[in-house]
Amino acid sequence: MSRSNPPRHRRGRRPALYAGALVSAVALTAGTLSFASADEGPVTFERVDNPYQGAGVYVNPDWSANAEASGGSAIADQPTAVWLDRIEAITGGSAGNSTGLEEHLQRAVEQANGEPYVFQMVTYNLPGRDCSALASNGQLGPEEIDRYKTEFIDPIAEIVGEYATANPNLRIVNIVEIDSLPNLVTNVGSRETATPECDVMLANGNYQEGVSYNVGTLGEYENVYNYLDAGHWGWLGWDSNFQPAADLFNEVINTAPSSPDKVAGVAVNVANYGALDEPNFEITETIAGTPVRQSEWIDWNQYEDNTDFGLDFAAAVDGNHGLIIDTSRNGWGPELPGPGPETSVDEYVNEGRVDQRFQTGNWCNQSGAGLGERPQAAPASGIDAYAWIKPPGESDGASEEIPNDEGKGFDRMCDPTYEGNPRNNYNMSGALGDAPLSGHWFDAQFQELMANAYPPL
Ligand code: BGC
Image (cartoon, rainbow, N blue to C red; front, side, top):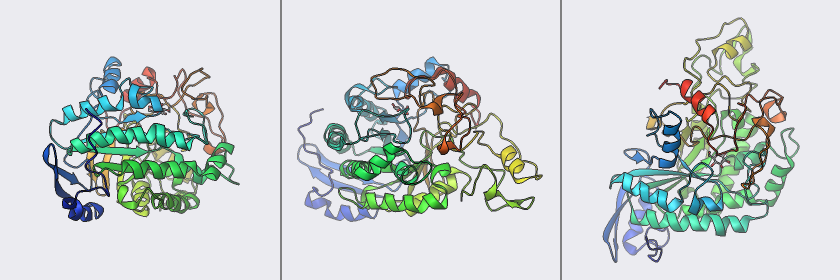
C-alpha cells in the first residue's frame, strides 16, 4: 500500500459532501456516509454506535498458532487483540507476536472479505509506563512524551489512517493505554498505595498528555473507535476512587486534541481476573447482621463485579458510553460455587464468590483462573462486547528476575512466594511459578486457563 494517498476520512478535513455526515457521526447514531474520492470513486463509510454489532472480529494468526501449539484448537479461532507495546511492535511485532501493524491490517482486510470487521488493538507505550508495578515497565522514560507522539502514535496513525480510509468496512477498536489514568488516581500522593513513579507521572502530566494525543490523533479517523482503559471494579469501585477517576478521564477527554466525539467508551478488566458477575451475593445484602459491603472481600467497595462497575463508569465518562469487558481470563471454572453459608458475612461472601483470588488487587498470572466468556458482540444491554483483549496464554510478568531488552522489570506480585504490599493489602500474590516475561507465551498458564474455563470448553 502506498502511503502517498492523503487520508480521506479525517475529521476536519472532509470534502464539502461530508459536512452533513459530521453531524450524524458526532451524534454517534448509525448512518451511512458517502463521499467521492478522486481515484477510487464513491466510498461508503459508516460510523456506528457499537462497532462490534453485526461485524466479524480479527483473529490474530500469531496468537492462534501459539494456542494451537499448546493444545488449544478448541479456541484457536477466537479473536484476540493485537498489542502495540513498544515502538518496534509497529513494524516488527510485540513480545507475543511477530507481525507488524500493517501486515495485521492487511490480513484483517482479507479476513473481512468486504464485510464489516473489527480490528482490536491495544496502544500501550506511554512514557514511564506501568508506574505502580514493574512487570510491564516500558521503553520510554517518564519524560519522553515527544518520542511517544512522534515515534509511536504518529506512525500508528499513518498506517491506521491508510487502512481506515481505504477500507470503510474496517472498524478499528483502539484500547487506550492500560492502567495509566487509574494509576494517577489511586497510586499517588498521600495514599498508602502511592509509588514514587506514579507521583512523577501525575506531576509531569505525560500520561494525560499522551492519552489525549492518542485519542485525538487516532480519533481523526471516523472508523477508529477509542476505548479508554478504566481498570476494574476492584480498583476504581470505591467511592474514594470512582468520581475522582471519572473527573480525571473527563478532563483528559476534553483536552485537545482529544474531544468527546472521539471516545467510543471504556474498556474494563483488561488483563485482569475480576468476575463478570457474582451470582451468589449482592452488595445490598446484610448477612448475620453485617452488610456485604463490610465483608473482608468487598471492603466497602460499591461493586462486586465488572458488569455493574463497567456500566456505571462508562456512563460517567464523556463521549459515547460504550463498554468492552475483557473476559479472557475471568472464568474461574470449571464449576461455579453455590451460595455460601449465612453463618457470617465473610463465610457467605468467600464461599459464594466466583473470583477465587486471595485479594482483588492481585493481577499477575493468577493460579486457578480460567478462560471467561467467549468473545461476543452486544452480550447484554449497554455492553458493546465481551472481548479477549489480553491474549490468554501470554504472561503478566516473570516470576523471577529475567534480564531482557524490553524494559521489563521483576515485580514480586508475579512471585508465588511474595506476601504482598499495600496495593493487595498484604496478601499472598496468588501467582503461578515459572512464569516468563510479560507478553511471552506461558504454556502452563494456558493449560490452566483451558482446564478452568467458564463457560467450560
Ligand atoms: C506486556 C506486553 C504484552 C501484553 C499482552 C503486557 O503485560 O507488558 O508486552 O504485549 O501484556 O500480552
